[in-house]
Image (cartoon, rainbow, N blue to C red; front, side):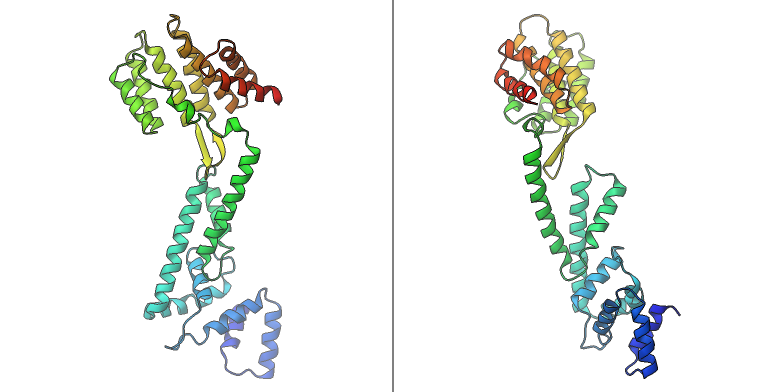
Length: 323
């Protein structure tokens, strides 16, 4: 019999002899969190009577135990079967358990999905486990949600202060009105534009790439490269709950490659402003991956030729020069 079993055996007795009380005191002094063990046991010892029930704290800890989120499992290992037996015959306590378990599942799902974009699966499990172990009493799920709100507000404030303006979005809402047919009437191109309207960027990328591969020799194919380049940049953006934006470097580089291809193919001189727009988006993209020298090269072309984005290009150049 281990120390915990012996403690519980002595606690179950209605009256202890002086020697037994001394033994119990010695055992408790050698066990961490002994006060918690005694308190939990005392709250439990009479709940098997039909008129008595375990309190919500104990049921909350039982929920955490069942979800493998309870740090100290020693007491619960002993009480598990007794609590389970009581829940089978007591609808009142069973309903409390069901509510707590549902709340736990909702918050666990929310927390896991919120950090999935920025953490590997193993780290997600460790974070959510560590988070829930701090909520072992009462309506722990509601407390967890309240804490998450406070954490989010703090992160939002921090990202507003520390993230540069040009990294708060890949392409702003004002910039997103750039595309129209420009003479490209192929079905794949039009389907690509429709996908962009729905913000289905990955689908749009596939359709635009198919358009390029199927119509590689068409004179207006440069515009498909232009739209594809900007769409790659749009799709590169991700964030943690709307804060601390990050950008997929591979997508950014694919976007720049297609913008440069659009400039190369659009050599007739008829659509020079589109080339300047491509230079602007290429410069913006380079800034997202901190290649400021390359960004400046493209942005200077926009400013010197008074492209449609020359004011925004100048603002970005000012930010580069101020660094």
